[in-house]
Image (cartoon, rainbow, N blue to C red; front, side, top):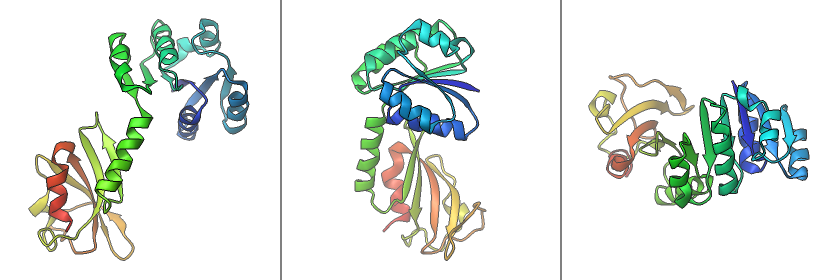
Length: 218
């Protein structure tokens, strides 16, 4: 799969690195010479120093062969223009980073597949760490309407219960169990007993998180 990323800042560089490690072919476009040199030294990928809103630069990156295009600069207007230009080449997916959430409607109106706001995501993640400090890790899924949480078993309501007594329900499902002392991952079985000190990974619909978490935490 071939992916073109416009923007060699923190977001673009980290994304490119992750995709390359996963075996994707990646080209990164960046107009800042210093960021270009930095990316070229860090990535095993083609790095083009130029403006991603320039058709010539996009064609130099073989945009017609791209399976996905990601506009990852911190400039919403540049990202929007680049996405509009790229749409003419019909990649399977176009994704744009937005810094100002109020701009998301403009991207939707021109048919951009998805928009992402790293700033909002980071803020939301930090908020959850503060509100729910006992939760070790969390991942937002779908369109933010579900979360995968890693939480300890502390509540008497769940200690000594079988997995089948608690999961699955229409609101959540236990996906994995970690037993002490080594906390190796175990796939949940219906007759498995939850004990104090165990940890579980649980997929919960976002709107039910508060009430579901109470079942397992003190």
